[in-house]
Length: 606
Image 1 (cartoon, one colour):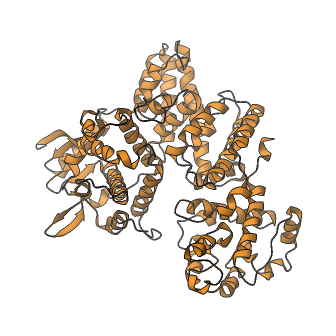
Image 2 (image 1 turned 90 degrees about the vertical axis):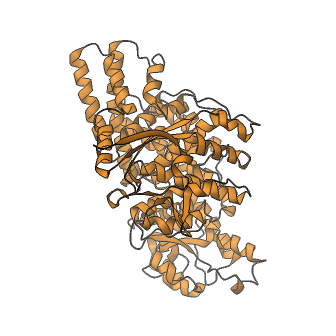
Image 3 (image 1 turned 135 degrees about the vertical axis):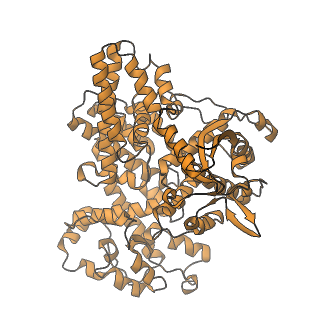
């Protein structure tokens, strides 16, 4: 092996005016929403631990540093052998900060040179991957980008940037954004390891990951627990049980073991959480999100880890809850009537779901009780989501974690009867009244995925009630060649409707109302882009539509006894329309309100 050099460098030193390449066999960007949420939460929490109200930017020089691990590079091309997931994600964060600074009329001189640099009059991104160029340009310029036919890496790239916009905490306001940029650039460090050849760089990477030089929190937790078990036989049995469950958890996600342990410890044991103010210190919830092995060791008393058999039981609990976690993960991505609410919540990206679902479960519960508790709690989450988003309140990690933490403690290790009572109280406190919020619920960048989910749920609910196979999974699946999209019943031509609407803004508000939307295949949606209502209605009522779109036309009410019975039994104001304006939109909003009442209610808790 030739010369290997290692040195600590901050993010500014690593990225400013420096180009990196990623070889074709390592170009996949695979981070998911949970990874971005954890990165943003870790970085912003660390910054806020040091920031004190009134600090000048010069004060940031005395803030503590944050270590991001190592980055392994090879050759003159600066090929990234290990670290591209973190580097790419940090670049997305820098772009978010740059766009937000521009929007607030501020400037951070070095930030653009950390994102891209110029050579011979041509600008290019510092992490140089040709297939990402178009997407990165759109993100940098704040433009929409169609990811439908793009590679998985590009889809992940665009989605993760969108999620940074959603989860970045409000506590870091525009007033202290430059402070955060200073800290991120100057105080976030990597160990840069540079090898002369790519072969040597790979040897370094393999050595670091295969020879125990960097134990994970899971491995250190296991070592600690096993070291406290006195019996050699029991220790060996528990070691085998632990390894078996960890391998299972890592089958589909290399970080699956860590994700589970964090959710389990928070669900069953965390008693405190960091206050939402600058300068507050990390508590149970936050510490578990980092070095959870250290938290367990420091909280022996809280976890009742005293005698040898306590550590044995702790590992047995780990094994049982790991099985439950796997059941939840399977339910999130595979629809089943038995666990449908778990699936619904996953489709809108509720990433703290596992924590809440694990909270009411007791180690002694059998699988029948476990599934009942999961179903009841998932149903509450389902209502929580619509209750918040219909008021334009986020359900993303940074804004909902305190509510989820308190709800977790409230329902922790409850029997079925107690769980129902506690969920009923939580439901009542939501004060969810569709009739007071749905009239003002409109399509925008925040509500888009939630409105699509509501339309999918409404349409599939009607299908199920009239004996037609539910099409929900297809409505929300974006990985097909011709996915379903939100269709505006009124086309985007204000000049055609100027007599009915006060001005363009008034037209936009009515056009984006939930009562003026439905779901159609992308190809049909595109073909109707500039169509008048009468032409659209023909498509809505054809076999290319669905029962909710068909209900706008008279044919839906002919020779359709089950649909008519469903309407009558639920006193629903379904009717056909030959024209579609303000009055018709208002009636469709009222129809949606009544359907929402049927679908999202508290009957399960009574």
